[in-house]
Image (cartoon, rainbow, N blue to C red):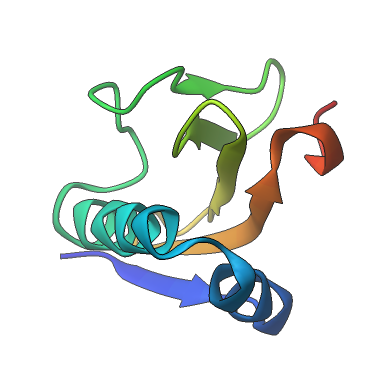
Length: 89
C-alpha cells in the first residue's frame, strides 16, 4: 500500500472539475494507493523524461500529475486540472 498526498491546490482544482472527472480523479488516487506510481492502464500515462514525475489523462481535457518520492512509498499528486495549464506543457 502506498501513501498518497494531495497538495491543497489539487484538492481545490478537483472541487471545480465536472463531477465525472472528479470521480475519475478519485479512482486514480485509489489506484495509486493500491498499485503505486506506475499506472499504464490509464489513458496517455507516461513518465516525464528525465524526472520521477508521472502523468495521465482523466479525459481529453483533464490531466493529473504525480511525483514518486525517493523512499518509494509516498506519492504526491502535484497537479490536477486542464491539459492546457499542465506543468509539462
